[in-house]
Amino acid sequence: MILDGKKTSEKILNQLAEKVKTMDKKPKLAVILVGNDPASEIYVSSKEKAAKKIGVGSVVIKLPEETDEKTLTDKIYELNNDETVTGILVQLPLPKHIDKNKITDAICPKKDIDCFTPENVGRLMQGREPYFNPVTPQGILMLLDEYGIDVKGKHAVIVGRSNIVGKPMAQMLLNRDATVTVCHSKTENLDDIIKTADILISAVGKKVVRCKMVKSESIVIDVGISRDNNGKIVGDLDFDELVNVVKYITPVPGGVGPMTIASLMVNLINHP
Ligand code: GUN
Image 1 (spheres, rainbow, N blue to C red):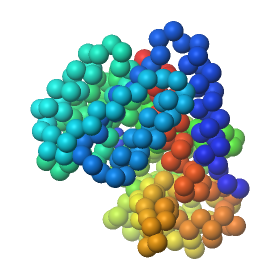
Image 2 (cartoon, protein in one colour; image 1 turned 30 degrees about the vertical axis):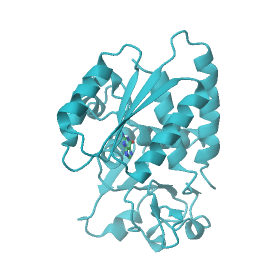
Image 3 (tube, rainbow, N blue to C red; image 1 turned 180 degrees about the horizontal axis):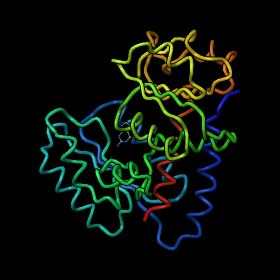
């Protein structure tokens, strides 16, 4: 069965739009985009579109590639102090001359809609509520919830250990009583580990996991987005081959991508 992220995200956005209508003070998202990364420009415009769709405010602050750290942190301090702004998102990747950690540290944890600040990540690690849940992992869990999939006691194998997806995904699954294994580029015997996955989450951006490794009857979540030789958007996994083998699978596009956007909007509405 296909885990339809497009349909599920539309349902969630419609529910959020109804909720926004009842809110006296509408939330507002502030996005900072530094430079001209084409993929980032597409992601940012989908976030703006979703905000518009549910009736909340959004502002995109575009800064040139050569922006220095001080200009960027000053902008963040200004947004921290702006009472009309509910969530601040600095789109990654940032240009190489900027220290990502310095920028993240400048964001007020109560406006850290991505769950990137040490305070929110620390809260997540402790099994406490962060002010905002990390968006991609939360979007994946919302999709599993929609299909009635309970992760408790299941072996979840995550391929990829990024701060945005792999690590927070592991923690959120642990907080829901899954048994979690995180694999990465140095993992030995990847095939053997993947074969034991009840839930497989691939967040690499490359074709590392091959179909023959995947257990039939497993649940497969493909977080990867890249382009094939023909310029077509593809995931980490071969959807056409796996769809007939596994129990559930997310397509790319139309799986995790739209759920991430819906999850961001959930955060915006549920701000502290
Ligand atoms: N770049 C790719 N994914 C993300 C994300 O979830 N948040 C931010 N801020 N930048 C990203």
